[in-house]
Length: 354
Image 1 (spheres, rainbow, N blue to C red):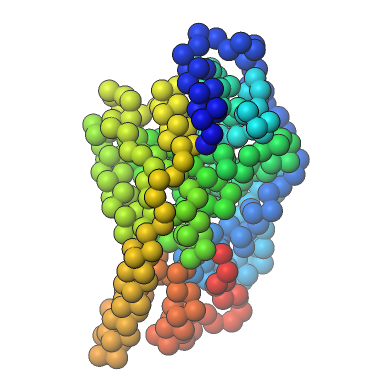
Image 2 (image 1 turned 90 degrees about the vertical axis):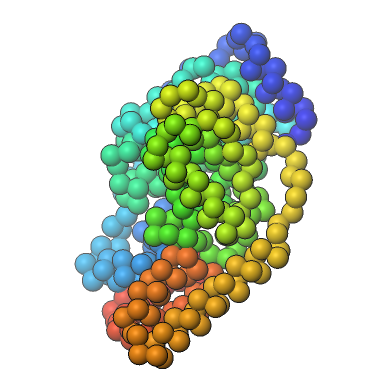
């Protein structure tokens, strides 16, 4: 980000009040659905190839083409706060906050930082931790982005995510599965391990986008267990997939419980996200990752050739989450060999495009 914007954020954090009266958050009714939240597109982004194939076939058998996603965007509410003014370039950034509670709220102490950065705050109602992620939470986050994109002049490089409790982990999942939409996330209440069923590796173009354009800041406190252990596993998995971490905040600026999105944490995260990058992608790491994936495919074939068919199938399931979207054609060919009925008709086969 440009030095002028960083200076503006710093000034706003120190100010007792904004020079322009802060806007109050209001609830609005969106009208336009997100093109990213159809059932098929949600499944393709959120599930590994073999898991996606089974779910899509089940949906096909039930005749429930619209099983996921929001049926009527106008039935939803978004809590929206517009900053006092846009950024220095005349465009807005946006922070989509996933509240763990059923009704979204906003801490007014964040106003100065949001105003200084020209950030719109949007938080959907009925997207709390008790809501289903595929059916509601992820579609609502995409709906919030679609509303902002259609309504305001957005800077596509400043589309951020944050949350509390389960909403924080959801922010990470959204960044990792839609790096072509979101550019940064603050994860302060635990994290998901990349390459597992909970967060399968994305398709190769999306993983590359995640490596080169996305910024993620972790801020789970050491005393916050098991969330801190989750964060450590997530950090290890990101290193394995060559995904850089923008910053890890010690103890998340908190002394007890989950780290919350305080003005200081938001300011520090934005400063990190919007500073110039100092390193490029690690091509050697990416090549090593591909070699590991190919070696694992060869190992599974050897297990099957040696007569250990059940072990080969179990290993293929793990491969599906860890590498499936990186080598989709190779994986699907092996799956057909190990279990020909896996892709039995009727029903679509997994998509190989991102």
